[in-house]
Length: 429
Image 1 (cartoon, rainbow, N blue to C red):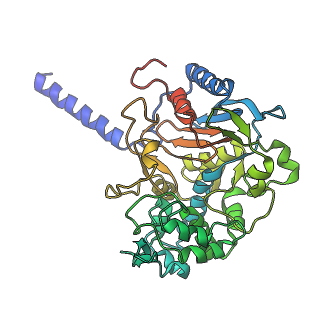
Image 2 (cartoon, rainbow, N blue to C red):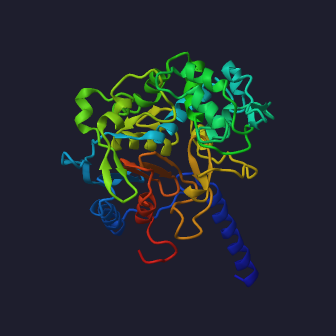
Image 3 (cartoon, one colour):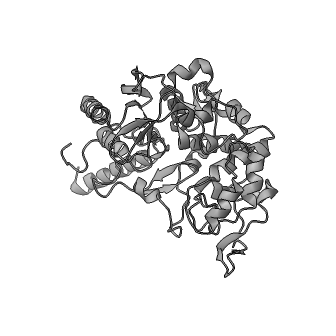
């Protein structure tokens, strides 16, 4: 066999290998590396223990699945420090904005049915938002100066926080109007909320900024309007109950309250104080008219993990189908154009964009100061410092529960991520 023949054969072999690689299924192309080994378990345990021992948190729990198997669980400290009640696997916590991906999922079940398109104007289904104005300041007499939006607010805007809503009562001029409207008062129904929001000027033109706010509450209202069912009923029938998430609820019944974690506030002096239950838990001990889409659910580690596993499995779990695979892909893909430069606090999450009710990691961290994570990961967190993420590359899901205000001022999330993935670019742990 001459040299030319060998070269030709080698070339055919390389082409064959390349063709096989390009034809791999999504599952075959995933990483075979093990993330949660004994060293990682040791790192996670010591990291979580250090936060409890320091007195920065009362208690914490974490659950991790890798390649569809439980590879880590631990609970440390107290769900109620004063009562000496340990943090446990079935402890109920307030998940705040980790409600949002569940609401987005409920909305997208209707998308799967062909009930709407993402670029439909919101006003097509909710005339309450048909005649909105954009706030541009005040005139010499202190009256608001309003202008027509450059384009209509779309459902896509609601799902990626570019709708234009302001949420902060401290916004000069506009904040006063937001406060007077009181749209998010828990005594409002979702319809009353929408009516009040539709009459309140927008903070910016739809599509021009990323601003966290009531977009997902409007998504809940749209679910109610399009489906013809109360939102709380719809999300339970179409997401929570099919997934067996019986303990993911807006209302915590009396027979479950002994498992309901206390809430803690870390003050300016670094002292951890328990908030009174009547202050911290009142949203969950009564059936309020407002069933928010952006917050308001409580859950347990295993309940929330079932939701995350469904998303990892492209919309299905244990033969129960919630969403189409292509819809999960749509939700976990960045929808923010580079032209959206004003992004509020989103850059603090790392090299991310935003999909449908999830942040989406676009690039790896560029320094060890950034949040650790894998490109393609999608995730979100909650005001009481809860966190979860889905890492399709490594088939890894992590759920972290803690009940701490203000939102993660202690670096818990970064430390937990570092413990999971290990040192940054060879830095010693």
